[in-house]
Image (cartoon, rainbow, N blue to C red; front, side, top):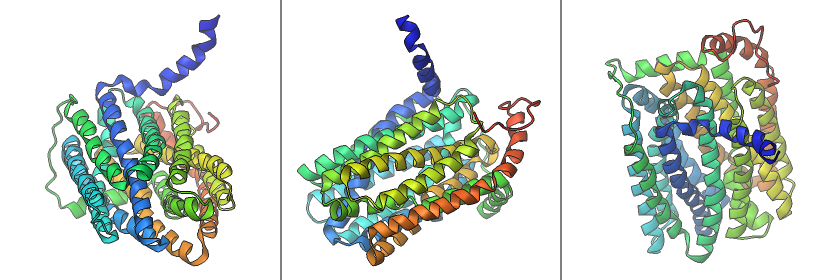
Length: 436
């Protein structure tokens, strides 16, 4: 009887972890998981360092703006490069450059010579690197899994890994900043890249005949734009994701201000707030990973976007630590569910030869809009205060979710033939059941 009691839980866990049955993805999951802990340590340390040096919400927003802007500008061209060349080789190169960037930042901070402008310059360098890394890495997932049916699970596990690091990294960063300073966080991040570089080199990839196109990059970029925005589901998902990234995601930039000025705490408070988002996001990622099918994710995008907007609005009114912690768990759950659902639906319906370009547009929407949102959030917080800025962010996300809900029926009709062709839905089903 005891074994039967835990049977369903074990079965659900096997479903949630099924992509790890692929050796290459298992290597990537382990190496990237270690590296992402360092990445989150650096993100928190950069925000705290800039606010400590400048004491300005505007500077905090500007550093994030100029650090993420290159990703927006480079990503479309990076998508063409990802479709033309060996993706694993591109990722290895970007990880090596990212390691050098982190180590330089660590040396500057530990020697006491760091200034805000130096942090900004190195953030721009990292933004350029990420412009090539992120869309390539997103489109590389499909090559790491042995069974195409496990793609959605692999994407959800990526989110689980990302947010497990979000949970662990900020907590460690908060302790290290308070005891040893920001520079140690940067050095730890630099060393953590060794793990992901090793995992990439250890993969045994099937031989692929890649024939670089002789057509101009702009021609292939235009082809990708026409393909993506000519598709109602792809266009609608990218537009909603762009709005949420512009208006909602920059709440992360304002967390140091909330921690210090609203909750009257310090680096530990900031670490716990960031970790709360990670706890919620971890739950959201596991929830998606444990789903057996991608059917129903379009409706999930709407529900998650609505919850994200409501939670941000509620967060704007809180000045109590435990309440803010709980609300940020909801924010993290909704944010991750929305983002990963968007990613999964896109990767499921896109054609392989245009995957890199579509995922570059996804990168522009998810990460590329963030610098504009960070700048806007910094300016608004400087003028009207952080709580009101967060309230505006939440209301804007709610408006986007309502708009998206009007597109769902047409999106279902457009997606259904693709799902039937790929065997996700049987041909005799009259419509996509969004209740699963």
